[in-house]
Image (cartoon, rainbow over all chains, first blue to last red; front, side, top):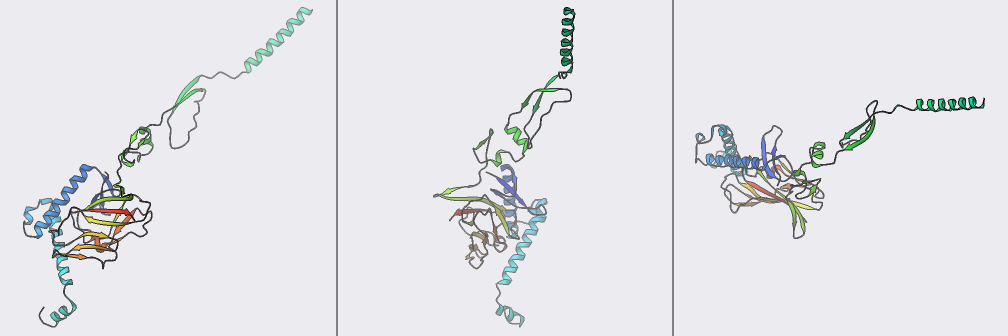
Length: 98
Length: 209
């Protein structure tokens, strides 16, 4: 089995995978990265859901985890905004009820 | 008189032979050399003032080939194929299903992608369409951001933030693979890639049509 890591132009890890492509890594490196990726994803979920605070996140990950939560909140707000129909938006602008 | 003439004749002939011997080229000392096969042709010549008695050419071995080309490694040779004593370990993640060729792989995103994702793979040599599945997933994700859980060319299934399933038929570019024949990659367009979850493993598959 071939394991690889995929980086962007700035050297940031985008993804890991199996098969061709990316930069070849060992199975051990793959498993290490997979564990870290999943731990971070879980922390993002927990922080987003209010199950933990940022102080519960390892110091070296706090900035990244907080950024990803902020991005999720922004995306959710964007999604909510998109759910408002044109008629509802017009109603709000004209001072009616939302 | 005749005796003297004969002696003179003999002397002349001897002198001729001696001159011929003196005119012979000098016998050079012999030497042996060794040569190692390389990527270009080689001309083996003796050192100045010597003559070659033999040239020993090294055998072609896996170590030699590895020195000549750094790509000559087990990971680049199909599994169990023996080339010059080097047994391959490459498993391309492919095979056949009911006689149809396929290639597959996994991908796990460190963060939800912000742009399109290109996935490379071995050529099938036949027409195929890519599909992507969220691995080991039976229900809606706990994540509130939603997730693309199944995608194929032109359509897909998305779980929204209310844990309801939505058919992404409106996203006509869910997966774009250009010309399928001999293609060795496919692209998950940005509109779909940005709906894929970080930390979740997706399985991709291309199977012969």
